[in-house]
Length: 55
Image (tube, rainbow, N blue to C red; front, side):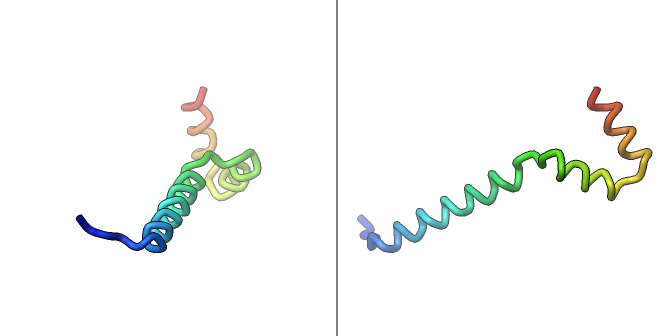
């Protein structure tokens, strides 16, 4: 059986926790402000099309 030092397993556990948190934040929906800023970067036609699809 392979013996893993405790500090190594703690470090790996910390990396997994940070990666999980980063992925969760990356896929979290943007708030109203984030959506507004995203809409400013798109054309009027794109915004209207998206709104029509969401209804």
